Length: 436
View (cartoon, rainbow, N blue to C red):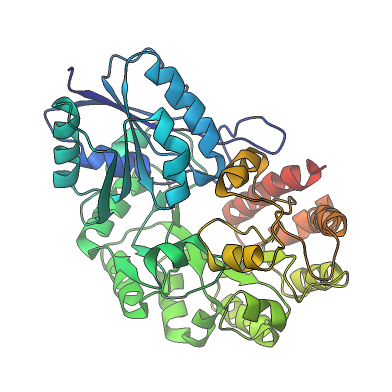
């Protein structure tokens, strides 16, 4: 067997069936630089990020390692079949949900869960070379090594992605990470993260932290910011966070000094009943105050919302629109609640007979039309019909992302920031206006 591996991250399909290519607000995961970093030195490697490159089905690699976005697992299966017909060994990696294994088992030779260490990958490739690979490997979470960002050079990203932790300390009922990590998180050693930040600083000035929650460990976040300031790592960055960061004014000031300019808050709902259904430990009545405290620190705020929960009604769409304007959110993202298999909300809706899909496989079959944002309901709401919910999201999206509102949100004190915010809003506008 030729000791060469082809590491592939497919793109995913839009709601209209086309593939996401090039610039998009919602980009790719970090698995390409992660996997490239753990390939043994005695193996050749070739990589492909389909967002920006075309898949090389004629590669001379003997092994193909695919890590797909969960949004479009069936598309990744189609790719796998093409490689299998060419006699390649196929590995699917970094999957966390077991229903993926059911779907991918017939189109690959092996699936691994978690993130492998260099030694894990060495052993896996040795098993494949010897013809004794297992159907499944469990690797846990191994992130303490520098990632290989050289595989992304030459690609025009709106921002480069980095990661300081995996997992989240919260246990929201709709969240895949909550189910996977059981309300635990793993921090990277700062030395490796600093190495990554220095590596990407030569490729871009804009960075997005892919952490589920930048506030998992405030002491760690403070140390990170101080190191970035001390070592003059001049990057403009943002990431996901919880609204309770508003109470830590010292940390917010430090984050601003270290280059943080936008935080994406998972607010989810303005209805307290819905927050309780989602097991969110916040008070909706405090959201506006929290946002304003973050803005006072000089950091922009974007907000994620979901509709269709038990506390939502026909009035929820107008209420959310008014809140987005009053709070001066730079990017409001609104979806229908998606009950992902394996989450508590999926089980609850299934037990109550409210799911509109019968199996996890059926969810995957529908999922190719899922995009961010989505107006595809997989369940029956309590106080709205599915048609009202779908049309309500579509019309709300069109109101939020009309040109006048986009221009108003994009005005900042810095033209570069205004440009990025404008592009993100325009990217979302296309998706809302494409909704049927």
